Amino acid sequence: MSYTSLVRRLLVLASTAAMLTTGLALGAGGAAAATGDGSPTDPNVKFFGRWDTASSTGYVSKWAGGYVKLGFTGTTVRLRQRGTIDFFASIDGGPDVSFVNVSGTVNLTPTPLRAGNHTLRVSYRPVAGSYHGDAVFQGVTLDAGARTFAPTVASKIVEFIGDSITVGQLSSKQALTAYGWLVGERLRVEHTQIAQGGACLVATADGCVGLSVQFLKTGSTADSPNWDFRRYQASAVVINLGTNDVGHGIHTPEFQATYLTFLQTVRAKYPNAAIFAMANFKRRFFDQTRNAVTARNSAGDPNVFFVDTTGWIVEATDTVDGTHPNDAGHQKIATRLAPIISARIGG
Image (cartoon, rainbow, N blue to C red; front, side):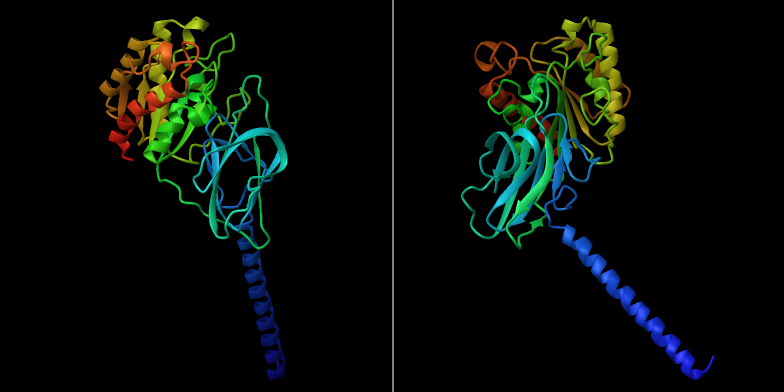
């Protein structure tokens, strides 16, 4: 190869390298542009609870008490909804505003905000029972030139497992006025309610959803995919089950054995979590719940605790119907439960 040919070859290589470098820079810029666009895959959008992320165009909220947080700039924010749904939205830590039976692009700021940095939290009404809203987050639309940024989030998350009481059914804002949500807010930790109205601990042949089984799933239906527990690790798990099992023919030996196995399952998924087994407010399977905790302690797990809820609420004044707490009842439960959890995990 002549000297001239060599020089030409080197110039071509240098030009190619320059184009590759430019392409990489453009590619990086394109990827960076996705950060801040408010789509479900935007890393500045933070999801708490169990979300089905199978479709990049819309993440689906499962169970109760799941929510999404993000920071954004500008003066307006609009939520993109695939179908009709009820939800609550809080901007800049303000009150949770109810949006009922809305769809499409929903304006969350009919009165524009001051220019600057803002935060948004959205919680969908859980899809359960006769309610079939479309709890699909498709992202947000911001002002021209505005962008998202990562919101401040807590390092700890508490998971509450239960039935309609943990869902918050019959309270004024359902999940948002349930004791689990209230405890999480008081302790300033993230939180979620893996709960279903009518759920049992033990899965039954007559169709009662058994949380001892469904806990492992993304959602409450039998065909729901397995949950990936690498998505988050709970600092604490609070279990409140047993209210409904009696009505489905579950007897005490079966309940206690299932509860013990369930505690082992929770421990396997959350090796470092403090686990709290609450006596349900009807005191059903009280001894069996306590015995299951004692068995775990005896097996060498000291980070499992029985919570005696006797006297926490008065059915005549603190419930809607003798079973489901009203707002005042949930507040009373949260007041008693929050310090018990805080003593073990801080907050």
